[in-house]
Length: 52
Image 1 (cartoon, rainbow, N blue to C red):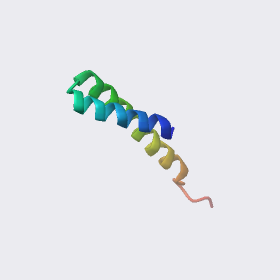
Image 2: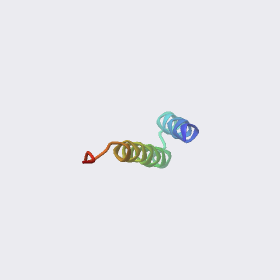
Image 3: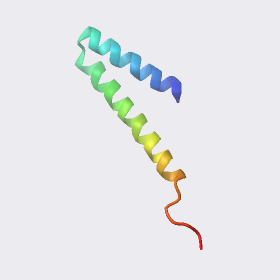
Image 4: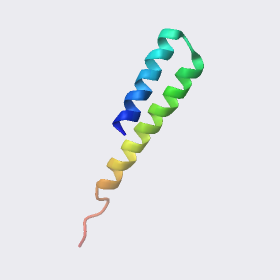
């Protein structure tokens, strides 16, 4: 997962350097998907209700 995150960052940097909107959109979608995945994982580990 960390490798995919690093690749998305590299694509984003390359998109900024090259000024390519398609690369930028792909990297943004990948990074936002990664962030949603991390948030969902953190939300699933937090107990929503204490057992009685």
